[in-house]
Amino acid sequence: MPIVRFFTGVTPEMAERLIRHAPPDYTVTTHPSNLPDEEKMPLVSNADFVIIFGGGLSESVLRVAKKLKLIQLVSAGFEHINIDLCKELGIQVANNGGANAIDVAEHTIALILGFYRHMVEQDHNVRTNRYRTLNNGLITYTIHDKKVGVIGMGNIGRRVTKLLNAFGATVQYTDAYPSSPEVERDLSITRVDLPTLLKTSDIVTLHVPYSKNTHHLLGPNELALIKSKALLVNTCRGGVIDQKAL
Image (cartoon, rainbow, N blue to C red; front, side, top):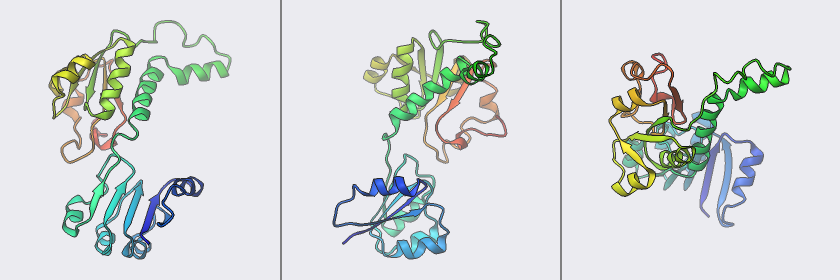
C-alpha cells in the first residue's frame, strides 16, 4: 500500500477534505509544513510520495527519503526544493503550474481596480460617514486606454491580458520566450524589451516564476525607469523585486 505524506499549511479541516479524494488503497497522512526536520525525517523515510502545499524539504530530509518516487508541489514554483539534489537522488518533482491561473489573474485585476478606484479608502469613508472625502472625480482612474506592461506571458500573463483587453487597455509584454505570432495576434500584444516596457507603461504587472534568473529582476536601475505615476503590481514572488530599492 503506497504511503503518501502531505505537508501543508492549510487547516486540519481543509486537509481532511482534500485527502478524501485519495484512492482507497493509498495511506495518506497530513502534517504541518513547518514541522522541524527531525520530525519530518521519520515521516519521509518510508514515504513513496510526498505532496507539499507551502514550504519545501531540506537536503537532510531529502537524503533519508530512500523510497521516495515523487514530490508533488501544489504550486507553480520550485524555489523551495533543491532540484539538482532530487535529480541526484532519483526523485521526480512535479509542480502544479496553471492550476491557480484564473484566481491570480482575477486578483491582479482586482488589485489594479482597487488602487485606481481607491476602494479601501472609499469603503472606510462610507463607514465613517465621510461620503465625499475622496469622491471628487480627480483621483480615480480607469484601465481603459492605459498602456499595460505584462512581464511574463505564461498561463497567468495570458489570462491577465485577456481581462485587460476586455477593459480596453493596450498591452505590451516582455518574456525570455516570445509568444507565437498567432498568440500575439489573438491577444493583440506586442513584445518589447524590459527597459522599453518599464518606461512606457502606465501599469506594470509581474507574472514570472522565481529563479536565479528572475531574482531582483526589478532592481534600482529598472525601478528608476518606471513612470512616477505608474502602478506596479506583483502577484508572483516577492524576490522578483529588490524590496530595498523599491
